[in-house]
Length: 114
Image (tube, rainbow, N blue to C red):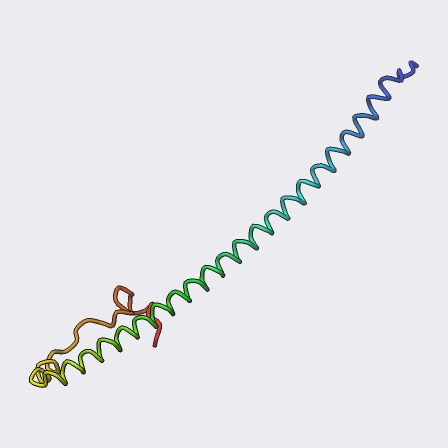
């Protein structure tokens, strides 16, 4: 029986060590991938939540501004009718056919009640 040369034993040991090292690297990469996926999901959720909250603030501000504009126009109309009472009957006869500005262009089922 022939004895295995020492160089081959050394190569076998190096191959086993390289295989173990590759397995460890694979596990590290898998763990890093899971952490990245988790962090991306966390950031995506956070951004969606922040975006939703920002849109709510903008919508609330828009609603408030629209309400103020309506109040201004109503005050102007009242002032006008006080100065020109002869037009009061004409204004009362004309029904408002347009929806409030806050709901224009928004489908009925998506409108938020006041």
